[in-house]
Length: 221
Ligand code: BT5
Image (cartoon, rainbow, N blue to C red; front, top):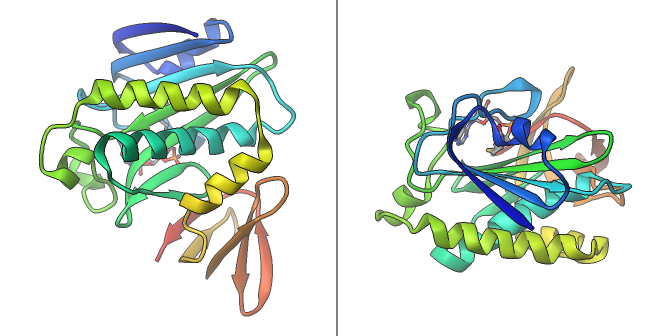
């Protein structure tokens, strides 16, 4: 793996398109950090903004799970904070988002972008929906240690993709069992986050019926 560090760039995921497999891009800030569906990702100084360029695999959604697991483990190892992995792409602490993953599939490679709120401030309008590790522990956090652990965990999950282990670990640290609200393109409903199916789609249980969620936003209630 080769690491490239930047002070400020538009977005590590965008720039990574021009880098080869095995590259890791890390930025101190991003001018145009983004999430899914072209949403903005607030990227002030003090946070982690990293993208890793990975080879194509049959089920690239596994990479989103790997991103969540690597971030979960890095945060826990360095800060002892136990976050919760929420389907499909983020980590929460007490119903507030601390980390988001963006997986971009290209013809010849896949880019996994990871944003973690460490010491960075998030905008006012996200105050009720997001938090950072510094606010949780009420002290400045060593970002470099989290980065090191994040890269170590990314390495260990991607060296040989083991779907069974990825699903097992994901389920252990995830929000399964929680009451959730689901908003898909044309429906909103409540239920229990029940399981993953074999492809990594989310199964919600509602009135004893099982509903498969392919896309959308899931909110922990
Ligand atoms: C995500 O999208 O959560 C994926 C975020 C990926 C960011 C990384 S940083 C490195 C790499 N380079 C990039 O340009 N991106 C990746 P999504 O599930 O769509 O959630 C986006 C929503 O999260 C926004 O609409 C806001 O409501 C909220 N949000 C924005 N910035 C946030 C922040 N710093 N912390 C918590 N929530 C945030």
